[in-house]
Image (cartoon, rainbow, N blue to C red; front, top):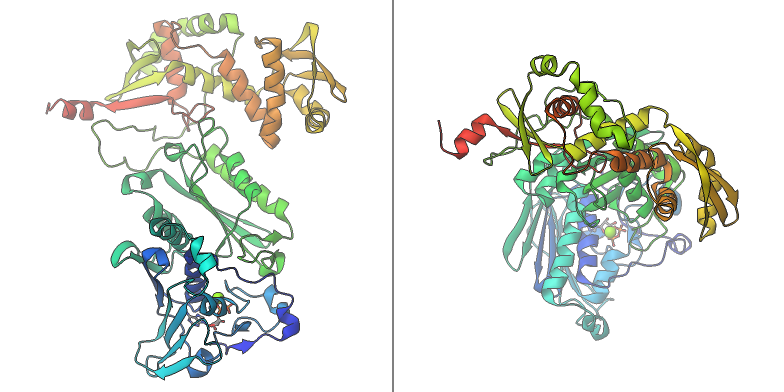
Length: 564
Ligand code: ADP
Ligand code: MG
């Protein structure tokens, strides 16, 4: 049922956050698409010309407007969506202030064609300067609405001067279009620029599918995952790219709340915590987090463009995002269901998840020989047991083993590092008192607070510290620790940035320092033992997220040299 458009009473209008700002064409794209979505459209088409400056047109097949609604819709605070601020507690629409069409009519020549049923249809024309008398005439149109804004800012030269070049404004419009399309996968979206169709996104029930259609190439699809969780009064869904799609910036990180893209650094950070250990250092995941929350528990009326939201319990949401993604990363078997489209060599991960197996850690001096010793007793047994065959070494770093018609090139450092990491995380870290403690000073209250609040946790990680107010000393460190004083202090203070994940961060640091290095020699038995252990891992990545090996199938190798 369509609600009628009415003017908000002045006392309600006053409670609304500062007015809509139409500073550039993309702001109109946003408002017009929002209206089309609110009208329950199933297909939305956006056409822009000259970066939207000459023309923005948004065509929908939604509820439409009749004569009465059309003749009032352009007035400030005219809305069919709420009657009072009270309604905001239940409103599930993107708009609610009744300001967008009014603002559009002030900055451009506005034309709206609309029909509520495909029988009666009307055209409204209104422009800057003739606010008092819009022209309305009968026309023909199928059910739905077309909104056109022409010659934006012609009447406001100051703003026009601040516009960027056409291509740059067009880019902004397209980004805005993508924000909306990502938020509403069930709606089909088309985007054309200067008469050319640029993007068509067919309707889909899958957020993952929409994300990939909007932003990725077909091949990349393969590394995209969808994760869902529910909390008290809200749900969280995440579309997440694997480390294969990681980036050095945070572009392509999206956060939506009830269909609106919002800016909230801490919630995106929650996603990053969740993937920690799965991604190479200093890289960021791409992905979209969708939070759907009871509108009574969130306030969208705090930012003119609704880009911010205040949650009644943001901690719970933060926690849900981190935990959900972390659990996914931990339990996920990274094995793909199907190999990606063929290249000559296919990088594949093991298909059968098994319980992680560990090899015992040893102190640094012994670590290489340990691998050799431990393997000695049962190494040819192992070869038949696991069906593994040692075939050699490459580039002073890779162990080569054959198994089931596949050749594995295993990164020995990363492999050992990963096994040590699991060990450090699951077993107590042996601690050693220092003969001479290491004094150090902190540089901020935040560092002091960190050391004070997390002292016990640090002790469990093998780090014993004492002190306060800027002056501290380290009394004990993990047995295997070998770094110099300055570096040690830096690594410990660095843990502050790991927030809730200092155990994982520390385990990653320890295992990196303790693992065999590139160029260190492993004999056949030790190499086999290492290979066997890592090939059984369910998620074979190093603590920084890199894969542990590259795999070549016999078949692919044969194909590559055209042997049949
Ligand atoms: P708001 O979206 O905040 O209500 P707008 O100024 O954007 O305010 O729109 C005013 C009213 O015009 C809306 O409440 C809606 O009833 C009507 N309207 C605008 N665009 C459309 C559309 N594409 N289809 C149907 N109705 C629309
Ligand atoms: Mg609106």
